[in-house]
Image (cartoon, rainbow, N blue to C red; front, side):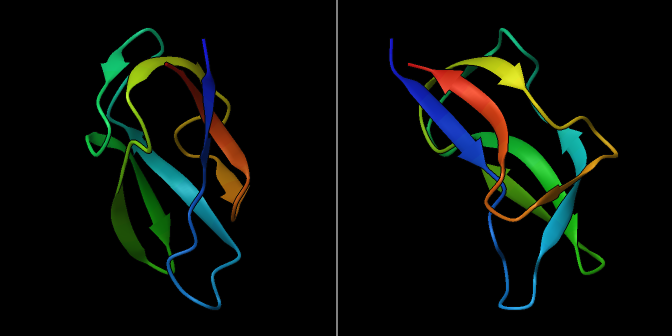
Length: 79
C-alpha cells in the first residue's frame, strides 16, 4: 500500500503555522480525494482542507487544538 502524507497547506505568503480546528474524519475512516478532511485556522480565518487522495486515514499526527508549521506532516492516508 502507498502512503500519502497530508501536509499543512500554506494559504498566504505570511502564513507560518495553523491550528487544527476539527478533523472531519477519524483514524480508520475511508476518505475520497477532494472530500473534507480537516478544518484549519490561520490568521483568524478557518479554511476547510480537502483530502489529497483516496484511501484510509491511518494516522493523525496533530490533534484538534494543536498548532503545526506550514508544510509539516499532519496525517497519513494509505491507498
